[in-house]
Image (cartoon, rainbow, N blue to C red; front, side, top):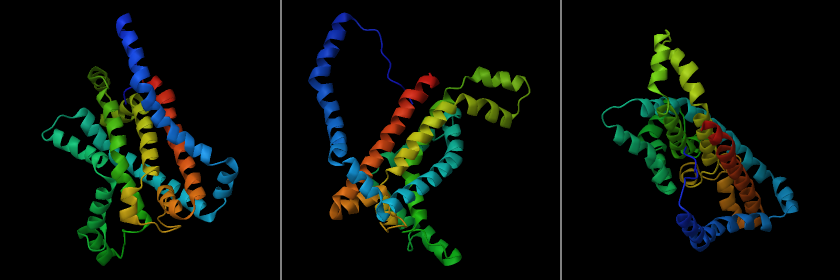
Length: 273
């Protein structure tokens, strides 16, 4: 994940950039900042503590943390080989596969949820077969929540890990091979240590994205309290029934997501450079 660095510029260009900052950048950043600040302003600490004591809020937080953690583990397990392939190997139709990996990021969440539902639902080819043969129902269960989170968040981890793997110098790999290292030794003692910051940053951002997934989860898993209701879907329900609950969960999500971004931007990326 690239960092923004300062490049040398002429004094005239510097003055122009300062003017551009005042005219466009500052208002846009204020537009990003003010709605987030207003969430904290409207939700007092007393209201936040009161909302956290509600069973619905507790269950939503617990479900979100549980499903997003499982999703992250599966994404790392299944996504790392894909990232290694995309970062180190040139093959036919790589561009098509690259576009396919990025597709879930661009798809509207409602489209992603509908696609998952007609595939893994009771009438879907895979969901119907699993229910008939194994008695396993996927739609409107926590499995559906996990699948929705994986579908939406996996590209973030794969992209970050692939960039890390692509940055490994081929001469370093050749030197390890000359010293007698086999493929598994190169993978465990060379690839993973050299790309650890890319893997960690991708994992943090991926987990935060899974934690905030709403649209696909809503269509594919529903909003069953204590079963499939996550923090984002509880916010949707709370907006209609209890605004304080929605505000409390929103503050929790914003805090977690912003903290995740700060960890990546301030602690991980500088070390990666």
